[in-house]
Image (cartoon, rainbow, N blue to C red; front, side, top):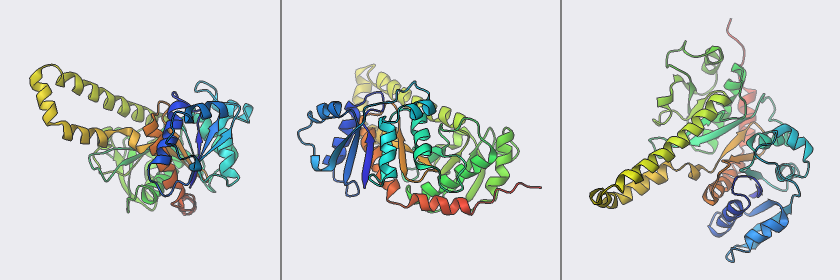
Length: 341
């Protein structure tokens, strides 16, 4: 797989981005054959020079003279800056020179550029960002979408998010019969706002296991594979979850180092604590796929470290190698969006 990597996107670009690419070339990963680093050629060369162990046979630099900042208006910036790194990544997919792309840059700009350059999978109304989150079960991560691409959604959009999420969960996360839940304020069928109430009967009619409404405390139990909601709610849930994980880690360190007895206990528990940390680490999921566009587009967190970038590249390769576009197209075509009488 050839992965186009936006070297200029993110809070720590190009340093952490290039470092992540180097990790992908030095660790054995059979499906990644080439990484196309897209961005300022001089800056990329300067970062690559720090890693004498890099396998340059797997890296190609593609110069991009422009970049979109995190605070720019997404659609306007994509239209204005034709030669920005995000647009060039999308062009590489469109031309067939890359099989997937990864960016930790302006997520709105990535979504806009994907729609402008690649279009939508036939039948898809709106693409959605799908974020994988850890649960109590190590073998069963939960997919949350939309995680921020669409702030205000109709019931039809939410139904399509569920169908696309179920397709990704099965094809990439290897959940054979994904369970879908509608995120709401109560588990009763009639709970929620007007959009969730209208989405509920549509979800009941689709070809997947729909468990009904789920609440916030259900998300990490490991009983739901796909949780659907609008992008406003999804983005708040995603960032709150990340914040809680970081706060918990900080408090645990603070408490363990308060006295020698606790420090000794921490040493005894070191293996278990490291295992829990690894399981709950959001960076191992790398990034969130933008579902609904032809091609594998992975959006990473703006503060991604090189580890997150590496795992995002792995996720991009997995998405591109599982015929996800065809699977989503087939499921969307078979949807029943007729409204109840």
